[in-house]
Amino acid sequence: MAVVKYGAIVTDIKGKIGGTVFQGGRSGGIIKNKPNVGGKNSRLLESVQDEVRQQKMLNFSLITKSWGFLDDNQRNSWAGLLGVWTFINKFGEVYNGTPYQIFMACSINRLILTNSLLINAPAVQDAFDPGFNINNWSLASGLQITTANALPVEQTVVIAGTFQTTNTKNFGSLSTRIMFVQDFQSAALWNLTTEYGDTFGYIPTLGSFIWVEIWTCIKDYPKKQYLQKYKIEVVA
Image (cartoon, rainbow, N blue to C red):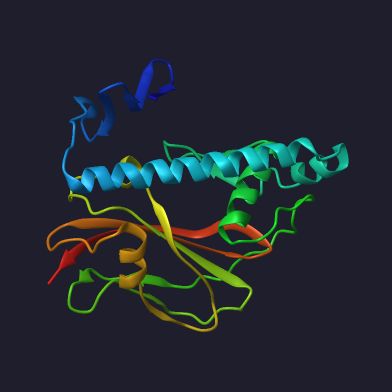
């Protein structure tokens, strides 16, 4: 679905309608036809995307029903996070959601962390900066991610990746899949080559690119903090 941002006139449009894709460009909006992609990787991508969509629908249904069982006092507790638990739209603008949106976001992240859903809003807890760093994916040494800082054990990292892509593809046009959830013990070096292969069914080829999204949180307050996105080239 295309997204239109209105000012005095229409100033921005992003998304897709049918086979037409709307993108932002340095000199203005870009409209192009979406090509049909064939081949084995395309079928694998479609299969994974279908699985991810089905799981998201199941999670969304579960969480929506859970909201329906909350009483007024419980719902009001989520209103206490307004202005604290904020969101970012497709145009990079921070905005306040509703208590329902905060409940949904918190609950989705709780499921990612394999925790039970909350009835009352959690207390705000700021995470510590892990100092994430990712170099290019070396086929010799693998996909290595480091953290510079030791962190409390109640802090968790969530790492998602994309299928291999080209240098021109931006993050917003790609589907992600979670491949790693880990509690911190200390400053760490993780090699996620195996996790990527297990998640996507192959190792990306030399010269291709992937995107990796990383965020961290205190487990009891699962708001995405220190969210970072990396475009990574696969090198020899």
